[in-house]
Length: 165
Figure 1 (spheres, rainbow, N blue to C red):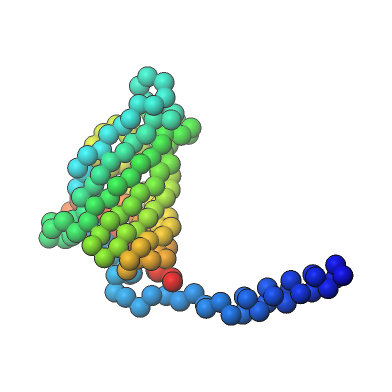
Figure 2 (tube, rainbow, N blue to C red):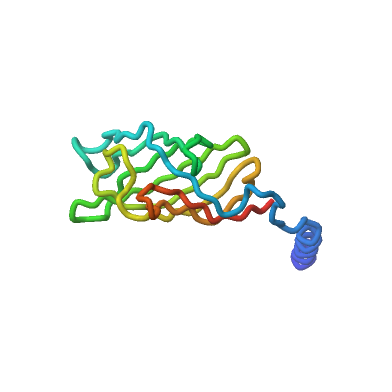
């Protein structure tokens, strides 16, 4: 009887797996590599640990996202927590955020370092985090988001994503 149940369970798994639609990339122009320029609106450090900068403190904020002409195309909302690591005045953070656009949202998560997470601006170094999902035109988004400085010295957020439904 146990062998029969196991065989039926295996058969059901095969039938159900065979009937599931395959994952396919969305056919839309939004889910491609693109860049936006962050304009830091409200970024602050929330002191939750020991007094002063310490493990457990959080960096939270909102960032306007601009296109190459300086027009606002979206907003980023994020939070990151100071974690052990870094050393020599460098703080390690782990965080996540949402990039909100008129046609959908992109969600990212990752870890990065900061010399002073209490500042309004970005980290001095390049940062690469994982894109882990999205909504709207970005449903099923995955790939990477890289923050760096372009040739003109502007901070740029570069998305290299694909979307799977």
